[in-house]
Image 1 (cartoon, rainbow, N blue to C red):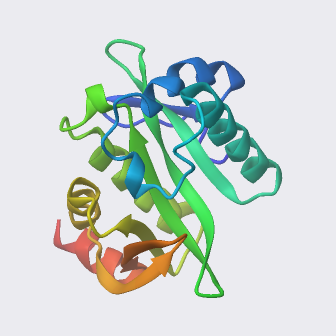
Image 2 (image 1 turned 180 degrees about the vertical axis):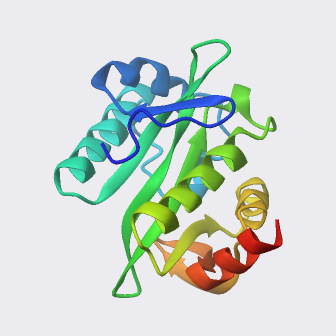
Length: 181
């Protein structure tokens, strides 16, 4: 996969495997962020996890990017996923950075670390003009990650029956930020 085998300071990044369904099932248990995702909340955690990971495999096959597994280097634990995602937003194809972590790993900076990696990867290796994140207006934690990723609110829309903000960063904004560091 496009970022398989890459890493950050604390994370190993690899393509998702069917064996990850077991770990990802935990995401759908006692998770306050589920209403922000626009998914069917009536499915069992096992069904939801399997559907999510198999959908990423479909994205891989169709060259629409897809989430990657995030593995904590120190413990070797599967902690969640992040990646570039091809999305259709208001009849326009956009590339999104999507991230979801198991609740026990929230608040440790992993989502920001992974999102920064995929932002940089997208601009350096995929020649993207802009990158977005689609975030439910109630999801303050994900909005903070987007801001730390250099993104700003571009607009508010309805997306999968949710009120969302479209956070965005352009390549020129990224280059300006990069040159300031």
